[in-house]
Structure formats: structure tokens, C-alpha cells
Amino acid sequence: MKKTRLATGAAALVVMGGLVAGCGSPNSNSTNSSGSTTSGSLPKGQTITVWSWAGGPQLQDVKKIADAWAKKHGDTVKVVDESHNANGFQFYATAARSGKGPDIVFGMPHDNNGTFAEEGLMAPVPSGDINTSNYAQSVVDAVTVNGTIYSVPVSVQTTALFYNTSKIKTPPTNWTQFVSDANKYGFAYAQHNLYFNYAFVGGLGGYVFKDNNGTLDPNDIGLDNAGAIKAYQLMYDMDHKYHWMQPSLTGTIALSQFTSGKTAMYISGPWDVPNIQKAKIPFSIAPLPTLSNGHPMTPFLGVITAFVSSKSPNQPADWSLVKALTNSTAQMDYFNDSQQIPALTSLQQSSTIQSSPMFKAFADEIPNAVPMPNIPQMQAVWNAMSILKNIISGQVSPAQGGKDFVANIQKGIQVQGS
Image 1 (spheres, rainbow, N blue to C red):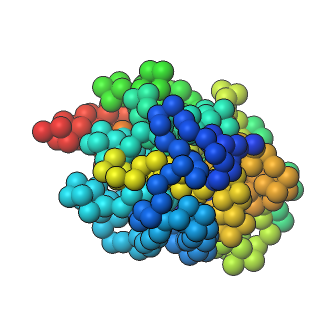
Image 2: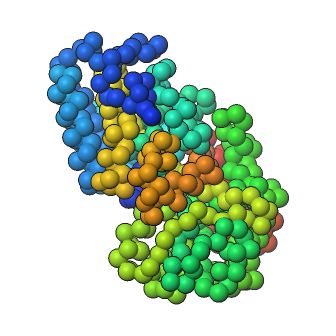
């Protein structure tokens, strides 16, 4: 996937022990406390429509799993490819409001959850249908809105450190080593994009919205606190003190510099692996190094999900099918066929993932990753992040830039609420 803010943002989508009640088996016989059932007691002859924002080989896996489930349960499942829908995820909301949407949505990034959940367009995951201990807490937080889980994790995405193995034999694990390697061999990344900068901002003590025990407070913005200002100063220093980049550098140029061998380190996600492989340069991927304060970087986490429409009349059967589409077997199919990193911790730690030099680093980065805020007010943050260019270029100081950033976000939130 490519991304800026996981598929809802400006640069995004390609190339991610049992999951739910029933120990990951799509055919286990159980009834959860909400009354949903997962086996032969379900009514037969229903038609369930799935809209999939996963395309390519993963879409074929989804169709295969859905067909097998339908045959077993005596139902019909229609899987519709929405991966190239020009209207994006808002298309689901428009259709759901009119009662013409699908029963199930597959492949939607978690940062859409807040908008759709608050509008009542998503059914909460039934009690007992997801075992939260099977996931990293950050993954659970990503699919939770105001204390309620609204979707089931399918795969995860975050960023890590790509490095040229012909120049760097051992990747840096701390900031001192990183600076030394960057000075010698070069470093670049999409420096104007908060999606990538959050690794520095969060690691140095900033935050987007205050997390109060799983509830994000849009009135408490931490993008102008002392930690965030330290991060902005570091971003400025990368260009003006260390001279690793020019203020005009974009993500496209950063990738080109890495694939041409001009720089030896680059921060990005698994969506860039195919392009880098095509360049035929020797490379590997490692977790991000710790920062000067000794704390780990905190890259943004994106979670690809499946959920049930609140408008669906077939919800017990819907959730049974969601289990089949998101259990451990399905998640490994998506990894093997489409390189989607599984959301289940047990699979991330499996020998299959841990022995994969291209994906181990991303899986190992998950514990430090912070979910992209999933509340509607996050849109105002993305709209305001152009201030980062002013900070990096020196048009405003880091402290003033932080104040401007927060002020613009607050204005944007006010516009959203008017």
C-alpha cells in the first residue's frame, strides 16, 4: 500500500492462537452473549453482500473464503470489488445512509471508524466475538471508538528503516549510530508528511489528541508541547545542521535517492518494498532506532479492518462470515499472497514472519507504533500539516510553528462542527 494517512489520506494503499471466539475457526459452533451464532443454527438462504477495498490477489482470497463459507452455511455471498472506487470510502457512507450499502465492508483502514461509528453506520462487534488478548494493545485501540470495538483487525501497517546493505552492514539501533551512518552515507524520507514525522514527534513526547483511557480528546492537542517542539527542531536540523536533505525534498525524491544508491537510509512502509526490489539495490529493513532521549520512535500504526453495517438485516450471519475472513488461516493467506502483515500477534511472531527479512522489521515495530487517531477531527490535522514545510524551511521557528499548527487544527475542527 502506499500512504499518507492509511488509505484515507493523500498517498496511500497497496501493500497485512485464534482471533475471535471459536479459536480462529470460521466454523466453530458457539453463541456469544449478544445472541449472534456461528454455525448451523443460523438461518439459511440469506444473501450477504461484501464490499472489498482489498484488490488483486487478496480479493481472490476473500472470494474463495466467502464461497466456502456460503457453501457450508447454505447462503449466497456476493463480493464486490471496490478497490478502484474513485469515490473512496465515503462511497460506503453515502450508500449506507440510503439503505443501499453492503452487509460487510472488508479492507477499510481503521481511521475511518470514528466517522462512521459516530454516525451509526457500523455495528459494534458482538461481545465475545473478538479476543483482544490476541492483538497488541495498539491494534485494539485502533479499532476502538469511545470504548467500543467496531471492527475486526485484518492486517497492520507501519514504517521501519530501509538501509543499503552494501554500505551499512549493521543497522543503527540508537540515535548516535544513526547520525553517524546518516552523515557518512545519507538519509532521506518524506519530511513534510506528519504520517512519517510522527515517529519523531511521539517519541520525543508530542501527541496528536490526548488519549484518556482509550478515548481521544480533540480538545487536548499535543502538537505544540515541549516534546513536539523538540521534534520540529530535529526536523529543521536534519536539513540545516546535518544537511541530510533540502527543504524542498519530497517523498518521491527520497525514494528515488534511495533506489539510486545516493542515500543509504530511508524510512517508509511495506508498500515501497516492490519498488525498491525492482531497483536491484542490496537492502534490508530494520526497526527504527531509539531517539536522543533513549526512547523508541513511535511510528503511526494503520490497521486494515472488516466490519458489519448497522443497516444489515443479517448480522448474526455477517459476523460469522467476518470471522472466516479474519481468522488466522485467512490472515496468513493474505500475507502469503499479498504481503499483508497479519494483525494477530501470534502470526507476527511466527517463524514465517520472523524469518522474512522484508517483513520482520515491520512486525517488530508494532509494539512501539501508535494508532493513527480514528476520530473525525483527525481530518483537520491532515489539512493543517502543511505548516511542517514552513518549520523545515525556517520560515517559522519550531515553537511558533507548533502554535500555528495547533491553531489551524482548532480552526479546522470548528469548521467541521459548524
